[in-house]
Length: 102
View (cartoon, rainbow, N blue to C red):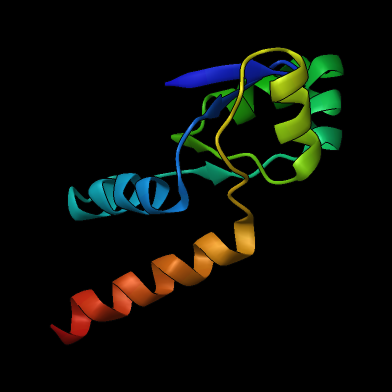
């Protein structure tokens, strides 16, 4: 389920759930745009409708930054954890290699 913070609708997923969701798209041969906005990008999305549409139209919108997590708590729409871009990319690389090897 998505939660709106700073005009961005974030997926409320753990790292493992995000990896599973992306892999489901890959296994079905579908494209999967993943964005990892931080608080500054959220503020830009509030001002720029085209950026907001691009971000919110992505298959996965993952919170990257403690500022988003704190904002979600202050707004009483808590998001469980930040899911940063680099670690999630490493997780996908591992899973893709495992698909090829096994």
